Image (cartoon, rainbow over all chains, first blue to last red):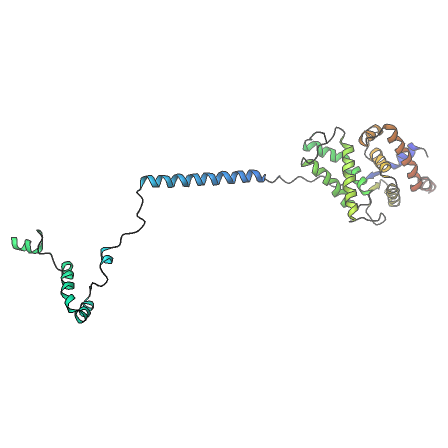
Length: 125
Length: 169
């Protein structure tokens, strides 16, 4: 058998065909693009917050950092305000009782000395 | 490597043309068919993903790439199968399973260079000129390897006996 005959015999064999080449999965987004997009979003957010804070500072006066206490709270804690406290004061220090009653009466009783006080109004009538 | 990037359709055309012979070539490294198929597809995926540029004559690159991939895999020793129990990767048109196994066995006994030339020329339809170009050898060297390969195959394969035996039946 010469080479040609042998070749033709070999060509009676055929390679088994493999499966077709599968489709490629779509490429994943580049991580650098994602990083850049995240940086842009963060920068934009920070800038917006900074501008908003700046505008607020210009328009409104700065709020006092400490809230002023109410007049009631400023009253000396020793000054009596209830019947029970006046009773105790009378028992413990009777000399202070008059001063405490005077101070309390200034707030509790109507004003008599003012121009528009109740007494002045009644006197006109 | 200097070369050109191919379009996906061109790469798929290359696969359609060469995949059968390349898979047979990969199987001749004693890998089972499904693994050999994976090896070949792995090479093409790498090209598809732009991981490799091809020279003007891509067949040589493809054979080299498949050879290297198979040798690396075979070095791991995984899924190497004896030919008798492995699936056939060269199919006779009659079919003749005994002849298929005998030919596969004969091919694996050739040297790498001779086996490469035979598969390229007989089953990949390349001319000896193209084989020489793909294997970076001269035409004389390619032709010489081919001639020796046929002689060895005749001996290993016992083709005279086989064909004479068929004629007597």
